Image (cartoon, rainbow over all chains, first blue to last red; front, side, top):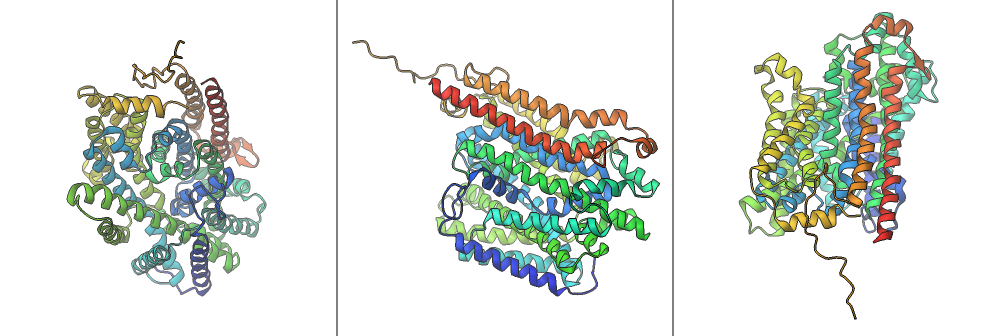
Length: 508
Length: 108
């Protein structure tokens, strides 16, 4: 997709904000510790919540939800429901126990709990796959926004965006600049909600609470379009809705970079209360996101510029920026939306690339290929892998297989089909052993990628029960069953691990 | 003089099972978890299920559908209320676990 011309205002805002973010990171680098504020003192539950929300808000939340709403109306709420309800599962079933277990990454937990390098390597491979898929979605967002800003075609913009991401990562890494998550959250939420208020005002709806006034906008659509949008099952059946939201929920509870947030605060209680605030801050974005899609539809209906479904899908992931542009809000605010989208994608991509490369260097390379490697050598391997991952992602993102939210959902399906059952049973059933979880993770990988890669070869009935974005409703229980059966037929874990579960993990 | 009994005597029963929680802290914690999961599941899965059974006529939904705060009712429920509901149940869960942890630690 090519856009008409280069836009200088967004370029200035973007590079200004990126430079500011590096500067703030630099100012904080000596004092910053996870869970602590700029001056090194504990930052309180709202501060932890803002850090959780800033870690969570990616291009899928910032650009994706509004895009899905624009194309599929009510069906988009399955994404919102999944990406918020998952935090309940995480908090209730795993947060406290995993923290008491005291291992900070998925491979660390898996090895300590199941005492198996094989299981560790398997979980590291899954962590890398999740990072890769998640990043493809983020890169699509980066490519689309750069294409819009620079007025070039999507592929060129994608490559340019990838170079900017890597430069940002290298400069930030070289300077040791850690970002300030609270400032990042504030930047994102203001750059989303303020332009939305202007869009609502411009269209004549209540600007004070656009989160409510988009309801009136939907009712004002022409009857046929209103029917499409108000009827909940125009774009998906109730089964597909429930399957998608459950997949995203269990995926959220199994995502390694979400779980790791539980360890970066000073104690368990702060982590739990941080989740409540985090959910509120994430909610502020999700309460608002559908409004962009609804207002964009309203504008199209008013001006008679409705797009056919294919065109709508092509523009959907950029709909927040397009809505601002179409409706005619000030250029500065449109630029703010674009920059917010880039920031959300950047922070997620840099975090995931580092996580994925770390998992390869320390959990696969060191354990499997070169156990004698020095720390310095491992850092070099991690840097090389970061570059390879980035290239791989660009290749896949050049022909994006779906909407941003849909691609991200596949990463959630993978987490939900593999790591969620492993964490769940690892914590709540002492009999779970390494054979069980290795078998379970392999079955989970197959169940996730079968519909994604071979969907066109499989019977329609099979795909309708196991859609690529929503495979964990059936997949997760199946994997849980596989783990239980295989564990029961193989020797139990050691007494030391079971004692640790009893005395440390399930005690207050 | 009689030596006080060591209260940290190694535990013999090492069974951990969500469906057969150990007496004491774990049993109470699992009760709180089950209540929270019930509140989570009935609303988040029960609502679309009920909507699937009741919302069958698109035209009627546009003409006579109910509204709340200017939003179509099912939009308000999914888009606004559910997030609020999740925050609320996490809030109550935390209160209960705080209370449970505190009372258990006092006793031991």
